[in-house]
Length: 239
Ligand code: ADP
Image (cartoon, helix red, strand yellow):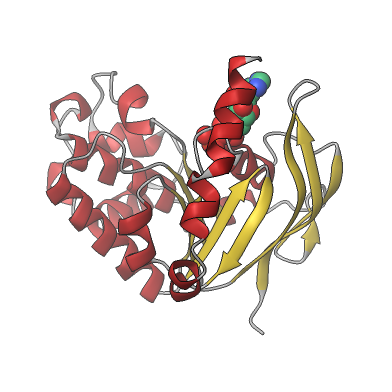
């Protein structure tokens, strides 16, 4: 078995009293490309935030690169592209280079990251002048500039046109081939299962952690978006 970069043991998390994640056990191995799927409000973003240490579970253990989370200091090893990064952070009229320099990396590292995502020639342009797909590349470059070993992306294809999405998926494929471990949260089940090596489904609990083939053959799609979805909508309407 290859090295486990992220290990979650028996995670329980509630924002207030409402349990959002329950009994989550998950291993993410080096080199994997993992699609994290589930309906709206099923706890996907919360799970990423727990891995990042932005929020602490009430119960359970998180290990990163073989260390308990509170001992882990190499935060640069974990790259993060938050939800709506493109929509929110692209409102400010600063240059592409300046966006990357917000991460306090060297100019050389910033340029290398921009080259990797094919945006080096756009480095002096204002972020506000770029297309959605180009902006997204810049935010990936920002996350890559610190040379992470695992990259977490939260719904990165929202608001991106089809053509840019294809380019985006091929960029991720390339990065994964080069050894980067990737976790991508997405609604785009059909697209994502063609890309990833592992599929993890959450709906408060871990529904499955399988290969894309097993995901299709196991009809997990129905389980995820079938009856459980009604439960979630029902639950929200009384929240
Ligand atoms: P997903 O990413 O799968 O859409 P989230 O992890 O964002 O789901 O949210 C899971 C549940 O937690 C939802 O019911 C959501 O309303 C609730 N939630 C998310 N963030 C907060 C917060 N900061 N405070 C209270 N409840 C929250």
